[in-house]
Image (cartoon, rainbow, N blue to C red):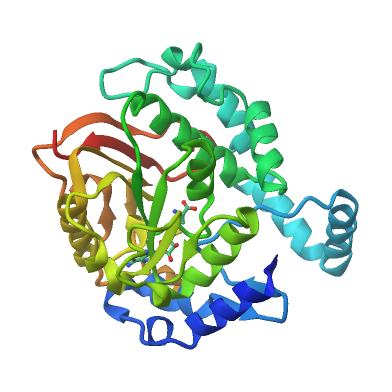
Length: 359
Ligand SMILES: C[S@@+](CC[C@H](N)C(=O)[O-])C[C@H]1O[C@@H](n2cnc3c(N)ncnc32)[C@H](O)[C@@H]1O
């Protein structure tokens, strides 16, 4: 369970959103079986000064900086359920093959270490070229100090991963004008927040399931209290232009203007969508991206986006496969590799692709 502090104005705005048709009338066609189940588990309760978020998937909110309280809450958790702790230790150290911590993986990849399979290829990121780039974050220590300085939160595993994605974007988009970014399936907005902080003057459009929007709104407005963040029910004719972060539900993608976006991003989210929905988003990208605009995606090589019943019951849904996405054949592909960062931290391969969609 996560608690995000909000001012009374934002509490009121969220309340309006949660009582609007944009939240209540959700289009279940856009959800895979996985998300039909997990969106029901995703709860966002508005109290008088907080948003209380609970759920099982889709958001990775970094914890608040409370070293002493954090220590005691860990001890309390251990004392409350020692068997759970034993189970976790058993899984981590005796059942799973040894994987690296995200922090270590970040440094290994950035240092071109042999364990990261550093073979060079025109389709792979050349981390050697990053070494002298002062615009990039070249060590896990620099990531930690940057993130903790502006977010006032404690660094978490997923933040290292998103700084790695940030480095990719910053290095390949050097010298390009990046004004408008569309992120599809942004979760609580970890990558969004890093981009917003490190690409001064950008505007971000986030498209997500209605159930996730209170989470991203609360997280982003707690980290950036002065940012102009617009909720789906607050859209007027003017504000598709006048915003820092615009939150749209999956039903509102028609509001995004043709050829208006410099960069489209989808991380770890197509992998959990039905194939028809992925095709719709590829059509959206083709419509809204500017000539010369970039598309960046990182998703599982293969995932069956269904619920836990798939462990015991054969599923009819087609597996979701990265190489079978309806890629634009005219795109100029800049990166197309199995993520060397993810290979160190998890068992499932992640495909990374960066392209100029309309060269
Ligand atoms: C695993 S989370 C990834 C979140 C974030 N991109 C990250 O990497 O931390 C998957 C995200 O996809 C969103 N999602 C699922 N189905 C979607 C759909 N049809 N359209 C847009 N977003 C969707 C979920 O709500 C969630 O935010």
